[in-house]
Amino acid sequence: MQLLGYDVGSSSIKASLVNVESGKEIASATSPQDELSIEAPYKGWAEQDPETWWTHIGRVTASLLEAEEADPEAIQGIGIAYQMHGLVLVDKQQNVLRPAIIWCDGRAVEIGDKAFNDLGGSYCLEHYLNSPGNFTASKLRWVREHEPELYSDIHKAMLPGDYIAMKLTGKVRTSISGLSEAILWDYQSGDIATELLDYYDISPELLPDHDPNFAVSGELTPEAARQLGLRAGIPVGYRSGDQPNNALSLNVLNPGEAAATAGTSGVIYGVTDQPLYDELSRVNTFVHVNHDEKQARYGVLLCINGTGILNSWLKNELFHGEYSYDEMNERAATVDVGSEGVTVFPFGNGPERILQQQSVGAQLKNVDFNRHGPAHVIRASQEGIAFSMNYGLQLMRQMGMDIRRIRVSRGNMFLSPVFRQAFANSTDLSVELYESSGALGAAIGAGLGMGIYENRGEAFRGLQKTETLEPDPDLQPAYQDAYQRWAELLDKELKNKTSSTY
Image (cartoon, rainbow, N blue to C red):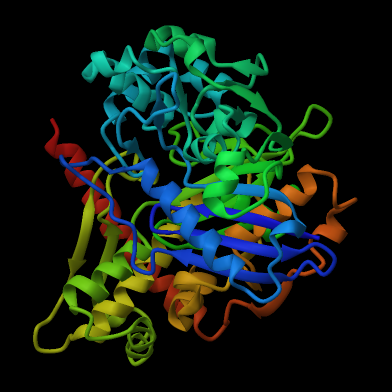
């Protein structure tokens, strides 16, 4: 018996095939080999064509089925993880009406901020646990304001994962956690956020009906099966945003547990049983994948837009591919903690929530042409990413989150020893590294959603810890000093930007 998981990211589409009995991954695939393009026709915009995601779903599926152990007849369920906070619009024929407005697009910031002020901050935080901010609901309002003819053709507005599920099953549905990440869920009423919809003059008819995350929401249609080389009728048993799903993939489901990623964006995601919120909405609370009426589970999410994308920019744009990522990591290790004063702010991928949606931009500071070279810039960038995540972690701790240990997949920025060291020592967290992935988590989610696994122990028996990294008492003072210098420079920058607006 096998399970299939898809992870629909903004940089690539990944897939995983899992053996149910062993919990081990049979095969994995990624498409494209280079990163997917993100179109930015105007400053602050970020769009992708949803049909491109579907094309690469086909390619990764074909690659998986070439594996020796792959058996399309043995696949019993499909799970989906996806990039959060995006907006996909389709007409009644399920045709895409415009490019998807994805997570790092900043065009709706002012719309969400105005809604927060007009509806009242206390109301929004009590009912939505967040400001409407730059989330999916506000992006839909932007379309209503700026593309009224197109808006009139909308049949359904959905998240990226809902679109992929629609392509697989022909059905347009979503989940409660999906509605919460779109800021379309009212925690007080336990239903659709009708007050916000009324304020935005958006009909609730545009929203799909919702299911639990762990539930069969449809079956693979004959047409989708033909396109993918699979058998028709396979149940789609799970879907989740990428960060709640990453937590699931690492068996992070209960209060006090936390997960982190540092791919294109950097995330710390902690689980709580309390509906906590940050009064300035700098970190955000959503419904976690295993939330239900009997057992409340919320995920508090810190997101830094510019993390791995900074590392990629250094490699491809600044160094023109002269160094591989491994070589960059080796060079970073030749410089002492603190990068001899060089400081990097990794905020070059749009407005940042932890900075109250301000666009500070990526910045390189304190470079001395006579002392500093590429190694200093690489290390300062990796430290800057770790420091930005620690900056947000402090906000989570102020909310009452008690995080002392964190689980991560061994990939992306966590492949760098310098980054791992900077992260553990600046955050004062014990970091547990596992062999896992979002696509693997989506496959496991499908097994849980279909009842194939009786309990968590069965579902995660294949999860392997490869390393535990503890804060180093000898290095921690140097990292704490470097972080304080970094944070002071950032606070100064933020004060300057605030004063310049008056």
